[in-house]
Length: 384
Ligand SMILES: Nc1nc2c(c(=O)[nH]1)N[C@H]1C(S)=C(S)[C@@H](COP(=O)(O)O)O[C@H]1N2
Ligand SMILES: [Mo]
Image (tube, rainbow, N blue to C red; front, side):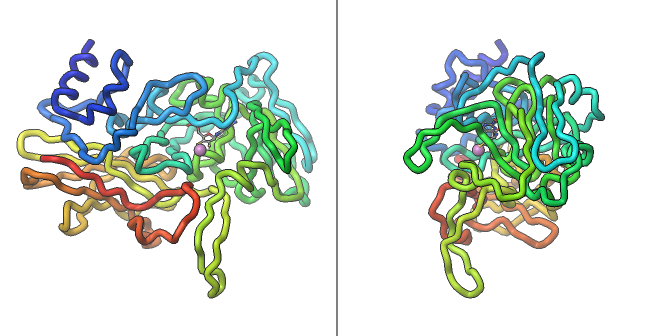
């Protein structure tokens, strides 16, 4: 009921009517505003942005304007899948580990849950995240499960094992060289990447059993990587000698961009892997005369040096970073905007890491022919 009143209040104040119109009748989490705080509407929200509640089989886009917690609850966290969303029989569930290993294994869910448990805060975004979606293909959660490196240590990868392939139980049909073939969603990691300390086989999200749409009962979480690496409904890990060339490694989720390759400008293709250094502003609120700006940053786990905000043509100024931030979580930030004058203003953020990398403007990003990977600075406009 409070939500209904809250939503009407928000609508009255004009927070992008088109976006919220789609939510009529839906339970939609509203920003937890402080007492006496009002949302300042963005004036840059495209009409095409239509957030909806979670629906079976559909992509779910988070409305980033409603972020109100460090851990993104189920229902708000984005959801993407390319095939079906299989419901696995938990008593029949097996995770098989095959290929170039000394001890192939078949683990039940109970076997997995009996191993030592690891918690990890990790935020990630889809490689297709972009401005048009207000960067809503995103979420941050506490993932609990078992260490992949430890498990691979136990199965014993043979020296000739170079690539670890992760297969989901979801399946679809792909046309490959004019032949329709059955495929499961699959991604791979090099053995070095697979053995990194923090990769998890997760069976819980935010302290609850992994929800169906997030990969029940077990998914891979590769912290610092784009969402596509985090194979859901994981049933099979296979170690092989050669590079895995499945669709989601080699054909889809491939970025085509112009690069200097040894002094020659070439169009090159790379698989979507580690997240780029990015940040976005998601909310602006006013309490009496003061304004507060919120946003989040993500990257591959390289520590950040700072997050900065610029108002109109002013200087870059440091934002405060949420103390709950950890290496692979998203980093929420706030910025106190002083002396905001009536009228329309442009606000933009940028993240800077300890190696001195600065989140580029869109114009500074190398020319790209695919829509994957969009870490350019995202100027937002608000009306005061
Ligand atoms: N089995 C399986 N895992 C998958 C996918 C999929 O289609 N099938 N989609 C991937 C992509 S592209 C993304 S962005 C993330 C989304 O994870 P989420 O739905 O839990 O947010 O899952 C990844 N894991
Ligand atoms: Mo994705």
